[in-house]
Length: 172
Image 1 (tube, rainbow, N blue to C red):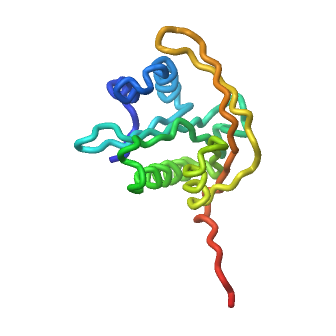
Image 2: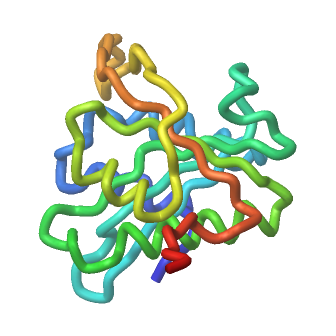
């Protein structure tokens, strides 16, 4: 089941401590979602609990990412390792795209680590294309309030949502 995050879900986003360092970040994103500036979705399994997450920024200071009108930015997209390669990530991404299209958004972008070949293959298969490189520099406060600087060189990928993914067709 894919649904939006509620306040009670926030501790579960830490995945048994693996993402505890993002505790403050998750709280900030949740507050942003309450203001209508972001959406937090989770994939929930009857036995496994929260097994996937995907966040969307609807409004950003960087309007080329999210302008609150027609462009949205996907981030923090992950599926727990033992649930990968089962179509969960594809379904979550398609769910997010359908929801964004219903909200009037026609462009969606995301960043994928330059060394994350499996994720890039997934995004390409689902109709995303590389539009450029991103330095991937950002920072966050960990659960103890200490600032961490992150450097994750990435490819910026985009997709136009008013049509299905491009498919090569032979006209022979």
